[in-house]
Length: 327
Ligand SMILES: Cc1cc2nc3c(=O)[nH]c(=O)nc-3n(C[C@H](O)[C@H](O)[C@H](O)COP(=O)(O)OP(=O)(O)OC[C@H]3O[C@@H](n4cnc5c(N)ncnc54)[C@H](O)[C@@H]3O)c2cc1C
Image (cartoon, rainbow, N blue to C red):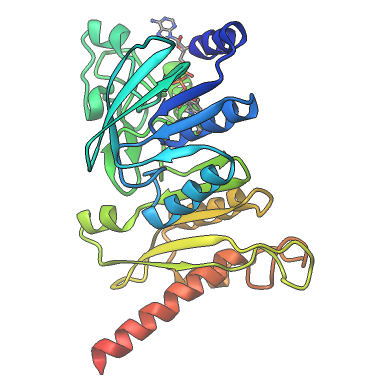
């Protein structure tokens, strides 16, 4: 919060006309929206080929278009190599696939990820693990006797990936409750994360839960990801819009492995990703999603909800795949 207040004060004092944001992860994108809302021209530079690399590039491309539609200049596949004081303002140098690039701007925000702040615990001798975060067990106990820890400073128990580092507010709250409970003699357990997340960028909402194809392959699954675009509610009722949904499942076991979604604000993307997250928690197969008794009224959904239409699209692909193989 300290950095937020410093930035807000700096914006008020300096009134920058333009800004460059290094990084197009979810926080960088939120900052692009916030600065644009203040009338600041934003250039967003990302070293990877597409923005929002926490989702597949097919969905990142939709976010890319959304940023461009709102006046953000998006520069991908470009690495910022240097920030220096220019004749006026700041000079940013970068390297693209084809050669050097440079910008002169009034403000630079570097938003390139989170590093756990572990000094208090590591000085006391706490063991660290993934990405230098403090190791905790499922009860949030550190390696130090009588010390529990939670939140961005600790490793994340992921229900599919095992031990990882995935700092999120939703996870921090659950871990904090467990740590507090156990610190006063309880026996609570953190049941793990699926990395479920959602972000609003201008008029789009992007969400994901569980594994993507490459992560699932790394864990020995036979994953297939199928993209479909069911409407958020019945098309005959005004203002129906498609939600782009990518469902990942295991073609051998039929198990649901993950889902990614992009839709307009108002298409209830967060409710839908939470349905997938709940299904993942209970180890459901993709086919079983069709058995869920989900709510329906024409202005808000369909008798088969978008969640189910997307899993049914996945099932059709797998059926075709198995038919092709046996033929
Ligand atoms: C811009 C932004 C947007 C985000 N949006 C989302 C979102 O939409 N959804 C989501 O799930 N997550 C989101 N997150 C992540 C989420 O904010 C963090 O995961 C969460 O706040 C972690 O909680 P925490 O208590 O571990 O750490 P913090 O919230 O960072 O709190 C730790 C506090 O401890 C203080 N502190 C540190 N060291 C000491 C010390 N030695 N002594 C005393 N105090 C100390 C710090 O100053 C700080 O106030 C976002 C993060 C950012 C930066």
